[in-house]
Amino acid sequence: MEAGTSTTKKQPRDGRQDPAWLRLTFHVVLMLIALMMMTPFAWMILTSLKPLSEVEMLNPIPTEWRFGNYMDVFTTENISFGKYYFNSILVAGWVTLLTCITSAMAAFAFARLEWRGRDTVFKLYLATMMVPIIVTMIPNYTILVSMKLLDSYLGLIIPVSFSAFGTFLLRQFMLTIPPSLDEAATIDGANSWQVFWELIMPLSRSGLIVLAIFTFIGNYGSFLWPLILIKTEHLRTLPVGMLYFDTVYAQQTNLIMAASVLNVLPMIILFVLMQRYLVSGIQLGGVKG
Image 1 (tube, rainbow, N blue to C red):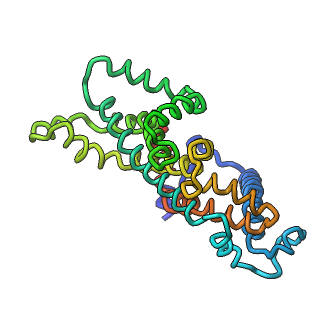
Image 2 (image 1 turned 180 degrees about the vertical axis):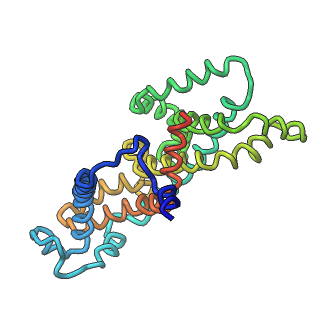
């Protein structure tokens, strides 16, 4: 019995175990850091549930819980908060879908196809990651002017639907897939597209999920490019809409906090639902990289 217990208990590699006081101190420090990080978020939620008369009180707990603040955010005049919500999710969703497709196709070409100059082109492609995004804004804006795509959904989606980082990430996943699978599929009569779509894409699901999460989060919170491109009120995304919301209702802090909670809510839901894939994907990608 004792022998069985000793084999199932996890022991440190060097045979030593940290003292109890050290583990306790470590956990206390972690809890304090977590508490410090959660405090502003908790304050935001509690303030969003207060009536305006209690916003400046020191007591963080509302004496009157006012859930109607969230409904007021959607019914305020001159601010189409629901439309901003829809625009952000629509744009981020399409950018995520297109980025996953274009990155996967590019990664397949760099990882699985043999062609002259492939590695050199891949290095040049990676070099674009060192170019600051702000540098590419003027060329992108000029191109969109010539294509008459200013102030449109396509102008928000197309320029950011290609990712060198996504290509690199998926290439690392695809390199770990045995080449013998490609050869077997080719012998069975599959062409390059069928190998990519029916074989490599399903096996790269973990990398695609990680890339989708990063892309959605990055584009959902994008502010500068939509601010420059969009002039029409009903095409504004949520980060830009928050700017106008803050300008119009700056004196109503409880509504600002309610709008801020609604702003981050999709990100929290996404993280909770995809946490397992996010953590495992980052770890796997790090090992493969």
